[in-house]
Length: 287
Image (cartoon, rainbow, N blue to C red; front, side, top):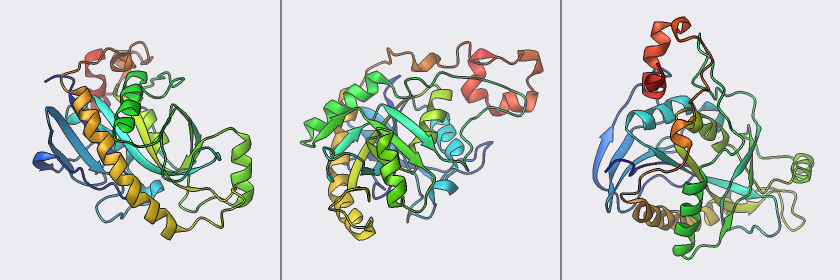
């Protein structure tokens, strides 16, 4: 069943996968430390699925505290080839209403405290991030969401801020001049690391509110966000279930699996042996 292992990183409110059968709990350690939580591996229909709660069960970790490298590295170790991030977000445009889903295709990174590369410590690589999501996976995810009767926006720009505070009104109005569609706090680092790990990547964004720029909106209300989020989670779960059906037995035909080809510029003889060993699941075929 090569090519049918789907990884899902669930964000706020998305802590489990209904329909996941033959579930195995897997505790991993990585060269980058511990992931957010245990991985849960099972099947939905004919597709193998690996699920991770991004903030840990019980929502224990701030966005800035997440070990993004360990989370994605663990997915790679478990044989994942396609990775879907499920994230909540605020809307930055009138046409994107609370309750809608957005399958974004671009990101702006406005974070400043996070490690977002596997490289360094004696090895240098520069992957292309011009198109940070997998076009094939994005297209299939949009279709899967719409098949579940959700309103899904095809494409959009995700602004990733540091948090954990929500934006000031001045910031929110500034960000709108950048042309962004949604604002949240987590998916950018996952997109960067998934590209380095040669995983197909897509983000399913669950819109919970208008950010505080909106004239009819008061300050961002976490209670209202949670109410809308609960309804959105059901839509997201249906979308992921439909996605597993669409991906069953489908091999990758995109370029994501060769993202590191020609990207590692360090002389192979100069790469420290310990670093090479730590990164073997990611760079082994290029050594």
